[in-house]
Length: 457
Image (cartoon, rainbow, N blue to C red):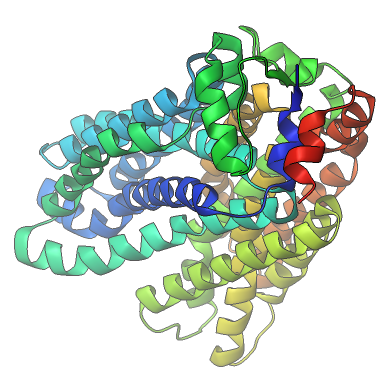
């Protein structure tokens, strides 16, 4: 009888076509998710004109999706560890595709807001599912890079919404960009067929043949036999109460610190996305078109997320994340310093890299910290808490703008949460993380013939 250490196979596998397939599907889902999130902002001027709403009503219409994302991340992220990630991802895809398209067929702000809330459930819920999926199936040496590369799909989705929106809205009206969001529904049959299920879920359900097939694709030299038995630490074995496991095995304080870090970083991201253009314009800068400004921020985010992931795979991910938070505090503060427009755009790109990019690296760290069986739950609840910061940020910074403070003071207020997040991450007990624990458990497992036959190539 062979005792197969699933973690060792995943960790030491060489990148192959199977990994590429998982990366493709997770990235494509994130692109669709990013499109659905950005589409309301792109179409907002046309929506306001047709529905006759004022800026206050328009702000509520847009923020309704954020409320949905908060609840979706917590609820759907949690049930993913119960019903399987593949089904949870499918449910999220249906929610954000159907209800975004439905919002394009309404003509009043209340119905629009309700539909955007329902779409937000899927937009927020799919994120922890795909992060957990990508983390589970990535080789250890490139795990953070794979997750952050996948997350760059958000910026791609936002750019796609901006590019498509201009042509479609001018020719067919704002409804067209919302109706286009139904397109991903066509992907569901193909995704269900080729995207693998979570391994702890398969083990829990006794679907050993499917698990053997996945391991054979992860490690092509593996030849399954009827007597194979699969080894996972007890904490990686799925059960029906994943939430309580976030506070076991010494993870309680670290879980709370993840929540603080997510809250603070999302506060910064949404404070800047809501008020940065207004603040800089009031300071007398000529920023050019809004599209150029958005592209600069998102381009910086892509560089920051992929670069941060690359660094996290070569150095300690916790230290990389702390450094990125500190860089965010410095770069945001610099926005309050008078400088030429060219230098301003450079700093804006740096802000995108160290805020949006940092949040993506934070997702990668949370994915590595929690065991497989509660990974979606841990990421989902942290993301939901972070969404509370996203909802609060525009209100808080809007109040500061109304106080007519000097520009520098506004940016210092926005930078302070980055320092708090850096302290919170520094206090996370990395010795309790799943990645550290797996190394200890592997040393205690009985001798594994598979290790010699499969890994000793």
